[in-house]
Image 1: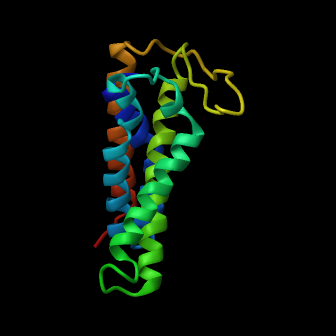
Image 2 (image 1 turned 120 degrees about the vertical axis):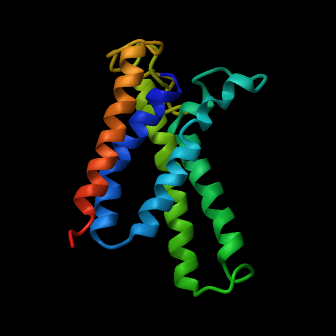
Image 3 (image 1 turned 60 degrees about the vertical axis):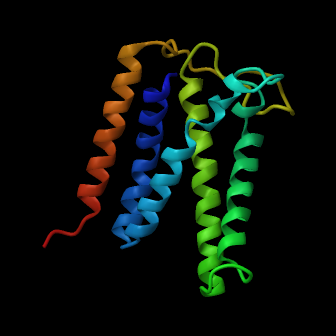
Length: 167
């Protein structure tokens, strides 16, 4: 998938989360989660620029999603925890776990988008090198990339509209 397709799948996947958080009045958490997801969704494709790392290798695995989530969670904890900002400990835990979850979600959305292509992803590496693919479209399909982006934008707008109380 190209960048627009990755963003589209991420938006489409995050729309239900956005709706639930918005419906619960957690608008700040919903927006922050969306920002993290959009910021980190392209991260696995950084492997294009890294020597000795093959494309759709280690950066396209569940392990990588867990590592990114853990690194982001620990980073947020370092800023908000007892040695960081002066906020309540339960808020620091909530922020850290929320950021970790959103970061891992972003990577998982990227894997889902790439699993739509014939090349697929070896999501279970290092346990298994089997590649998982739905084989729905080629990564370079303009129709699918733009279509997924449009669908993701629509789903996000619908989630926001439906979660916002009228009046």
